[in-house]
Image (tube, rainbow, N blue to C red; front, top):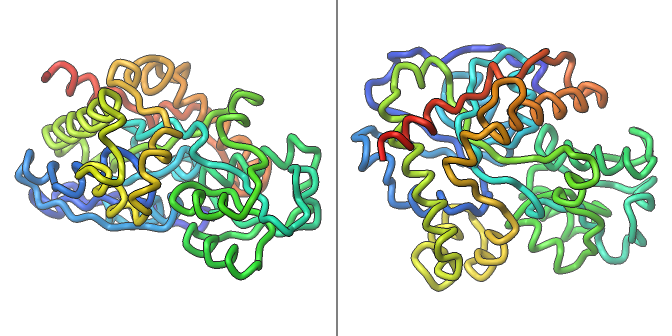
Length: 329
């Protein structure tokens, strides 16, 4: 839980032309540029990459000032903003869609969400999976205490699943692929979003002060992200376990090369025009990302995962770097 965080902005001039980027194990096109260190080559910055087990860990690292940019799902972003962290969502890494799912282990006797009553569910707390897991339980008529919800990072979920310590898991790839092999999919984030209107996404956030002091890096970085997504959308068949792109996605994420193509196909990767539209980063408080963050934070507060929420989450959403990247083309 983020309630105990001390809010600390990264010093604006702590390091000249150095940046630390936090990432997770999601399989996304950006991994190819990451492996090639295109950000460092394009900008001249010394770019360091640190891998984290979940978005909550990324947000905590940003709160400490040790990380300037980070990948986090909409749930931990909403939590971080609710705690007053000086972060801005500047890029939608992916619309999660069906890339996160609730899976019951075969042999658990569970074939529906309702049957999770009295069972053990592993999920990374304050993640997009956590948000949709709680929402799925609520939609099924289950009360907060009906299911033993356990806080586990993806790697811990995989180990607990193999031991039989949990009956179900809500998680993303590469662990999702592993649990699906011996489990039954009960629902997905795409289905929950369609039923409730509350979508989840992974995004890139940045320390606001650092971004203001390094606008050229931010513009160049967004262009790199956009180019990677465009390359995938143009030729998804080239992103597989046998290609350089696919091998990079697997290597950086920690997944299996043969799972890359199927994993990428579960997500939606937005164009810069979509990113800047009111459906996502644009539109102020009426924008899709800001409304999603508000809905997420409100729900997490109801579940006592958060102590307080903001009236408007557009204070932590910006489309200016996407717009600058488009105008710089």
